[in-house]
Image 1: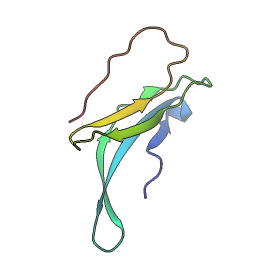
Image 2 (image 1 turned 45 degrees about the vertical axis):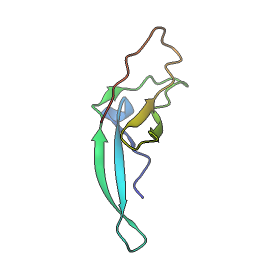
Image 3 (image 1 turned 180 degrees about the horizontal axis):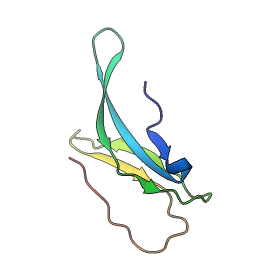
Image 4 (image 1 turned 45 degrees about the horizontal axis):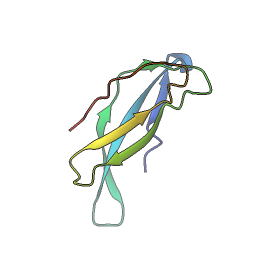
Length: 84
C-alpha cells in the first residue's frame, strides 16, 4: 500500500496530499492509481496542523469526503469542496 498520502514541500513549509485508489487485481494485491492530488498549501506549523487526516466513501459509493486540518487557530467558516 502507498504511504499516508501527505507530503511536504518547500523545506517542510508547505504540504499537499494524494488520494490513491486501490483496485484488487485478482492475485491478492491491488493496482494503485492516483485519484486526486491537492495543490500545495502552507502548513500552519502549529500543534493544530493535522494535514489530511480523514477520508470516507459515501454509502452509495458515488462520493468521497476528505478532511484536512483542525483549523484550531482559525475562526469562521471554510467552504468545502466536492469531488465526484
